[in-house]
Image (cartoon, rainbow over all chains, first blue to last red):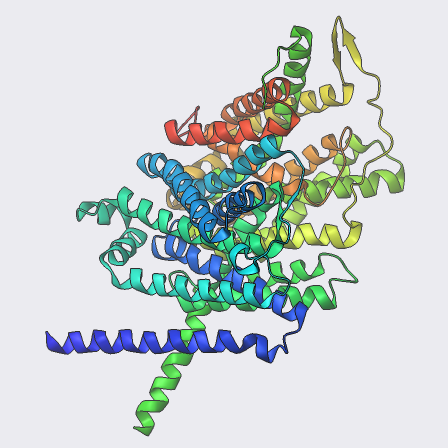
Length: 333
Length: 293
């Protein structure tokens, strides 16, 4: 039908414009922050959180699997990239992809039996959380509690060892835009529809002939790939390799941000990561200095309130405003 | 990572310790098994109740100079009420909600509890400097810390009491009926909301008992919660909602696995083996080792 086709084209065009708009806004952020060291680092951190949550949206939001291992895939990408750079002098431009490849391999290795044996819901969540701890312990057994520092290397562009944070910010921001683009691509693809069916009712999806295990595994692997790449960039920023990178807590926080954002809504996921991470950092700077942990306490209260009062998450607010704007548009037009 | 040859008496020593630790783990997990089994609530904050209990034990024991294990008589009623309050405020709102929402809300609760502890006590661990359990018991080459022995025995007694409560009393029958089928139980005139509130209170009170026992040989720190929380879930997964007996044996298995990991690979490996076991149990025995459903 030509009508629906042109409608679909218009939609993708609208999406393209909003992606370009987002890219322009993100590009201007350091300018607004006056290239202040601390603020740019903070912005890079927000981009990191948003990228991870956006990647998580594929497995958590679209496929409906509560994965708590974002930090495992991110950290694996990070340590592989980092050790290849620190020990063998391999440029992160290549190392990053080897790291992300390792993350995909682990995801496939763990995901295949997990989906094969039908591990779901809380058990999937716990299994993925345990995965982070297992990988942390394995790294600990190999490298101990030592931290490896990546030295400053020339040329900077080859080894990604910059003395300023702007470049890292732009790399993470670019990563975020790419991950959002991947999200939108998946949403409109066959894979996206299959995942939506699996999320709504796995048994019904299976009855319709969807190979549930296969598509869940695809979603998991794409997510691991993206998280691994984010980790590869992140390690060039911090330059410290440690078993602490495998942080089970970060995996939980990523999932919580995704849930607060509203499942399956990419704009909600990114918005929630940006808002929650910024609130956390703001509170840390204001009350957190006097009362350690108070910023996370407030953060916890916000999550409880959102979960109890607005289980649909931030996405419902976005929809509300969208409707309001379009309705106003209709009234004017 | 190297496997070393091990002195058999050290192995026996560690295994004995593992059994007593395992009993304590069972006690911690029992509260979670009750809450999850009866109410179908996914509580990620369970381990953090243990942590809060440990701090409460520390405060009461050091303020009034009481033996830490005896503070359980004070902390358990407090925790029972705390559990009911939290149930009314938060848990009741997410009963029957999507698992994702329950997890998010209880993670929020976990954050509040942990950071409350961090705010009040800061990051350094707090221990009670005195206990009556100081004299170790020596049997041949094996030395048993009396605090761990006491913790194991008290845990076992508590597990038995809960078992009797669930199987022999009218209230226990109501609880099990509610766990089996909420609607039918409601039709039979069981006040399900009250059963839920009391179950949550009881599950929370059990963590206070475990915390009091932990404080006789260990210290309270704000990050205690994540360890005990994940551990409890591992035991519940293995126990497969098979009642108190399932939880007891799963806890023992975990304790022994931990001991073997410490003996053969090193202290850094204890979590590794527990969670690897968890993976294999979930993959190959998804209904648990002692499954009922």
